[in-house]
Image (cartoon, rainbow, N blue to C red):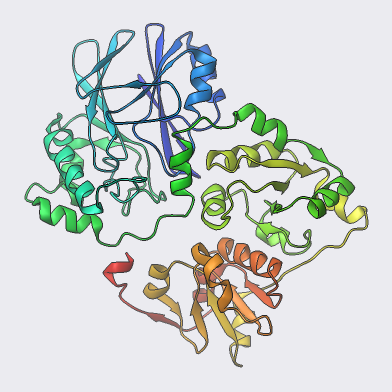
Length: 471
């Protein structure tokens, strides 16, 4: 394919590698540079341009590192400002990549510098458009993430309407739309699982592209149901405007192997230290280093770290399954957590063999929960508010305390009370349980399998129609 979509599922993020006749361009690269340099070498091409469709808020890009290593020019859209050298492109500017052309369209709305890139083949046909966060499959970009903008959300939504109607929607119906994100990203509300589509089909099925929609209707619809973005978003957007620690230095620090004594010493002597155990939650629960937070690497690891760990500059120690340490450091760096200072050599087994104390969290099945509910117990549903109001356990003393806001709602817990925690499948509830336990709320019990298994076990649930403000 002339355009390779490089999709990273845990971030629901798509970067693009384009090459023709000895030259290449990269669009919206992640933090690590190797995937793009390797592709260039494999195809015998030189990376000429690195395009950023906007200042991303949900991940930290590796554009500065990549430019240093390849000599490529970084390109942003009109009005962009940053601490590094880049080419500020203008609307309609064209860039030659071998025998093909990329035409830049200034498409403000998600942010004011947002651009889309139209791929024009050797015959002059417009084949693809990389829309960044302006147009997704099934949705459009949210207009409330611009950092330090003097424009209101409604102003940005109005710009987004104009960009879509006056530019993107005037492209050929058979052009392939390649967005920057898919389902699971917090950059939109209603994204499809599909990662590309024709513009013509999107005009038929995307609520925001209805032909009869007025600007006022569009603004109202795109602003309805927006939830507070994760707290790390503005921090990542700010980092993307600056020159950050190099990925190589991040790896060198994070991949220091510490024996249990060294690890323990760092825990006790480092101010603000955070210990992340990235093993599966149902393995973690049986034995873990005290005061450790559990974020299973095999799920939406980085976005949940970003949502919950407030101090993005905190030093981090890692406990991981053997051989996965680099993956953990990389995924932390993608969302700006650059200060890992090493991992526990030999993992939890080495810790136990050294004779050091471990902690544990009780985890019960939904059938056991059903028995417990014959008495009076506190059940905490850590799913999002919209999930809770859609359907939840029907009992007295059921509380919705979303994991997203655990740093705020931790004050609602009583250290003398016992709490049974669940989410939808078991991932978020163990994160919550580990954080609560590390912060003095010791009487926490995890419900394995989460809400899906709770319903299957026959526990009574209550259904509500979700209020539109929570969608």
